[in-house]
Amino acid sequence: MFVILDITDPFVKLIVFIVIAYVFLKLPIFGKYVSVVNTLFHEVGHALMALLTGGQVEKIELFSNSEGVAWSSNRFWLGRVLTSLAGYPTASATSFLFLYLISKGDYIYVFIILIAVLVFSFIFWIRNLYGLLWVITFTALFTLLALYGSEVLVSNILLIITSIIFVESITTSFDILKLSFSQPTRAGDATSLWKSIIFIPSPIWGVLFFVQSIVFGTLGVSLFL
Image 1 (spheres, helix red, strand yellow):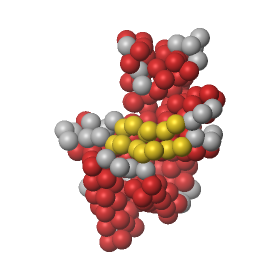
Image 2 (cartoon, rainbow, N blue to C red):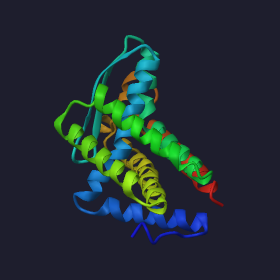
Image 3 (cartoon, rainbow, N blue to C red):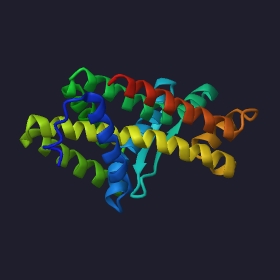
Image 4 (tube, rainbow, N blue to C red):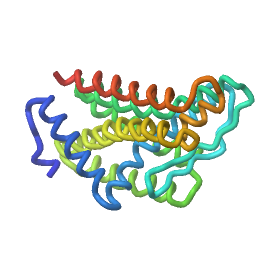
């Protein structure tokens, strides 16, 4: 299917692939599997921010339900806040970066970043069984396609992965927005931030996460107009 989708208009092609990504993400089992690529960048965002603010990263866990956890510690209050804040913006910024590179025809850099994050995370951070199996299988399939697929196939695979991150970065931010209102004490990163800054409740963080995903998403799509 990806071989024949050699659409000439870049904006139309992007919209088609975003729709395909959305459909893929709704499929049983397969949808959860591919959505973990967004989870990986989300958790890597937490991990990198922890390191940048003087903290430590113990491990990252990825789960079959597409959720994930980055286990980190930081003796600085600001470091803990920034670490909690980093996940959703990192995923959104990644989708924007990939869309920017693709709009310039620089597919090779998308490939390099993906492989680098997968390999680095596998070596240093991911420690649970599903997470390890996911990285191994995803990297293997992705690498085989890149090595033996045609140029059109490889570029389309990179675009569909980017589209998956794009869709997931927005939908997961919307999910946390809803959860921050309905269950403010169980709203993941929004709750963590509320605990760190008690005068800013979960719903405010939920709104912030969703707004940034829309901003990054809009900027990304505008590159193809």
